[in-house]
Image (cartoon, rainbow, N blue to C red; front, side, top):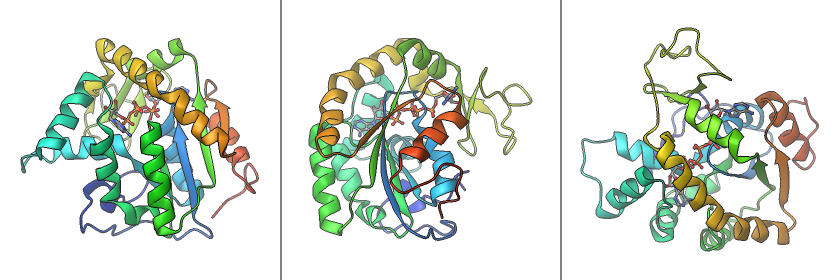
Length: 254
Ligand code: AP5
């Protein structure tokens, strides 16, 4: 199981169902996490899942899960998406929107959601609006995590991921007790293909080419909260909780 809850329906799509999604929250939260690669979206999502009881819906995780499911040959669109991802570029809007549409029931799940990595373009944001309207779900907040480029490059180049349970570590700011071994499950730590120095800069450029328009899209709708994410994870987390409408920092939300 993913350390932050069962996300089988999201990761596999189709008819797959979650077996152990965790306790049902008092209210479902519908939150988008925006921000550059490596700013800490996944780190904060894992914490927020525990606090809000919402599901962590990451489009990047769907692509990585498809990459690992190597028994079946990926569709041409998925093969192209995975090649684009390895280069650090953005996957086409058509492919990403089709992937989310296939998982639309996750957008009306009674656990709520934390969308991470989607939408990344205005066309994706418009498509999401239409999907949410179709299932009668309204967004509560769009959180933009912000940090300067040296901080981001440092976070990405030092990130290590457990090959078994996918837990996220950092060689300096969040190291494991034994070098290269996951504290959570004992699995081997690996570096993501797209965390290599030559790819990090391509990813940052791809992000910046589309980000301002998406940020403006949600600012115009009064949903955007910008958080300085350069602080340690616990502090960033407290800032995010304080930016959620009706939530008190430190209070258990579900
Ligand atoms: P995706 O998986 O979404 O990656 P990303 O947006 O590039 O974000 P990351 O997962 O790299 O970083 P993060 O912000 O989650 O940081 P983390 O918490 O791990 O997308 C990958 C690719 O898929 C894309 O490049 C694209 O090709 C494709 N794709 C996906 N969605 C798409 C879409 N909608 N449209 C088109 N293409 C799409 O933190 C990083 C490190 O920093 C960790 O080691 C962590 O321990 C450390 N850290 C985190 N917070 C802190 C802190 N506060 N202090 C110190 N260290 C910290």
